[in-house]
Length: 241
Image (cartoon, rainbow, N blue to C red; front, side, top):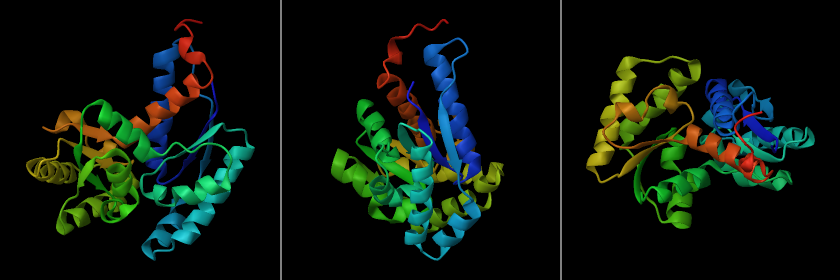
């Protein structure tokens, strides 16, 4: 199995979700006592979050580039950035390393198209919902139309992410708020809603909504395992050891 490089800590709550999902997927495919080979670098999110607030994306890119280099030097065969928002600087990270970076929007788009989804609602941090780095990739590269919540709902979604989910707080009222926003997106024609923040899957799941939900953390994790196994030939291995 190829070694999976995880660049996490944004927040550590969702990074632990990645670790769990990747190892469960590995065991599901290979069976026995198999687990994933992972090299993890977890940054201090306090520093990242402060830079986000003042719009210093160059500073964030610098931190993640250095972390990615460490992961590469440690022997990772490819890189997974455990954050939707930080894919805003994905191109800068890619330029700093020689190993492949598995982009979360590519993994998500591939799954959407497999399922015949061409119009989605997108929820995530304000950066992901407002800016083009994520939406335009889906629209321009894959022909997937993207609807985002109104300004008030975007603010509500973002506040829950940073004030609650990144702190490990799960609030029933916030779950209801999210589900109401999702219903609005469905009413506007969204065939499905993409959970475009790696923490949102901690709060809601497909069982909660009347429209399909695409948890980008789970999709990205599955993509990482499948890439690691396919590129190493272990996909053909028996489920017994």
